[in-house]
Length: 418
Image (cartoon, rainbow, N blue to C red; front, side):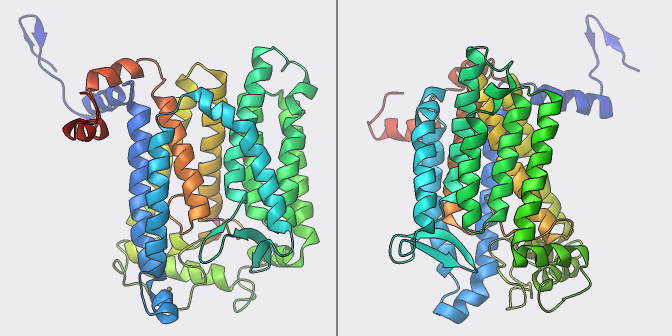
């Protein structure tokens, strides 16, 4: 019971006051901005540490240095963070302008990757373009960004013209455009990225308000397509049957999945300690890429995996909050598509590692090794930051906050006015 003192009331304490304080923090104009920025940087920092730990043994064996992949990842981070900073300062019009050229370039790059003599294959998949030396591009990664921007701009234009009441306007040309990217990617034997593209497509359809029957029909068509793609490739069918019978084929089809589960199980609650894991000693294939979550579980334990899940949960909340609060249709659609891409890919990756989904070989956003995936991811997170600045009250809050550290540093050098 509170006690009144004049016109004031003694502050309350306890769970109700704590919940009220949290609600007050989440209701601030720049909440989305700081949640996206904080969760992204924390996942990126964790990823750098875990890439070094997961790749150190094999790289030392192969190159004589435990830091080979870590140095490459640091280079990608050095490129991606400035791009994220630039994207956070771009207006939505710039993203809309880039949508169609990026979609065209992505389709051309995917075609080049399939061309003999120009594209490169690895592990049975034709997915890369080599630029000489260690530099390679996996064009399916920027294709995700292209679909988000192109699909959002296309549907925003149709919404402005009030054309979305006709189901044909909803699907054309969005469905054929998505189909072109999916076709090229599947010719390169990349089922995981195909599923992510279809998730983006379905999220755009959902946000734009597609009728229930149409959305269910598209979701069903997506399921049928994925099933056909699994059945026509023997190795995909073997992965599916191995997933359904995880106790069999322990030395062949199910080897990677079982070793991943062993790694997570051996970590317990607190983990074996950073750098102390045993799975990376040539037991677990690809520990620094699609199975890095298993190394996190082994070395950082249940607590480490829950931190990762919590950070992705924060990122999902912030992305959906941006989509809900912005007024512009393009920003709403692009924020939703980007969030569906990142969180959907994280769910597919983590689900495969813990054995609740089949293995598809896609990386964990911001955490796994690989510049082709990291740079588009950081750019799209910068786009979310740009949109967060355009939430109601965000501009006024930014103006009241004063110049940021970059502007302050430039002003100290006499290159900018305070």
